[in-house]
Amino acid sequence: MQNILITGGAGYIGSHICIKLQENGYQPIVFDNLSNGHRDAISNDIPFVEGDIRDAAALNKVFEDFRPAAVIHMAALIEAGASMVEPARFYEVNTAGALNLLEAMRRNACKHIVFSSTAAVYGNRDAGLLSESLEVSAENPYGRSKAMVETMLGDYASIYGFHAIALRYFNAAGADSMGRTGERHDPETHLIPLVLQTAAGQRDHIKIFGTDYDTPDGTCIRDYIHVDDLADAHVKALGHIISSDHAASDIANIGTGEGCSVKEIIELCKEVTGQDFTVVEDSRRPGDPAKLVANPAKAKEMLGWQPKYPSPRQIIEHAWNYYQTNLLKS
Ligand code: UDP
Image (cartoon, rainbow, N blue to C red; front, side, top):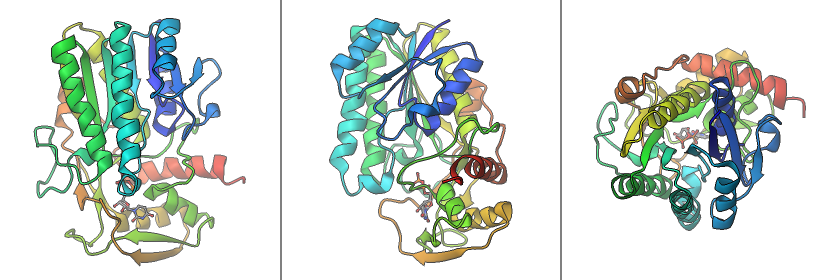
């Protein structure tokens, strides 16, 4: 069985990837500093190392101890809004941290990597669906901190012979369809969990950040992708890179190709939960592009990947199930 190092593996998306890796015959090794992740989000039969990607010695030791065949690099700061306030942290963790990891890989002759990139690299575009061939033009330091890593991966492929795939996530949402793991950020900043907390009466209201965007209902449009489908994309990307030893650096969008506005998400959450709640129209959140919707054709063609749960309603249903079972007790 091949060991796969997964940085940030105890986080929301990482914990889903661990399940998928095990289901597909890989042995995940989780490296996480638990700044956002949870030790209990991954099962006890998965080796867990508490450590920070900025710590070269800790990374070296993981490579020496486990000799991973490939790395899935997820550890990062993820809030676009926060990156507008403290950009340095994002460059330090997301960009310098990734460089530290790539150097540890190079020292340890591990050349296969799947990287969590983001739709935020596209920024504000007039284009309908976003394709990988568009030039990068992020609106916020978060997107730029990830775009820089994509550039580094290109150099590590052409100069050091790495085989890399950067997956540009659109908006990860939902929970494991069997309820084994789900989203629990603290503090929570993402739209769907915040709306569900409001539906559950744990918040007074939900704020809409901006109602004057150039979109049909004036609110931002995003492409919500089920976390289970996102996890599946990683396993397919991993299979793709470790099945061949040639050097390459590819990029693939992971989204459904369908957009949903903030107002539409709120309405769907009201329907799924059967609850009404207060919605407050607030000003724009700095750094938010009006619309981010994927052209997912490349992931389908290159990885044979296709979403199993493309409907936002199903995404919200799974998130609500997880929320009610695991988070409403407190
Ligand atoms: N959003 C909102 N209210 C909230 C949280 C988010 O209106 O309390 C909006 C946000 O401005 C964006 C969309 O919902 O347009 C998705 O935001 P989220 O933070 O979930 O993900 P992002 O697109 O920033 O990765």
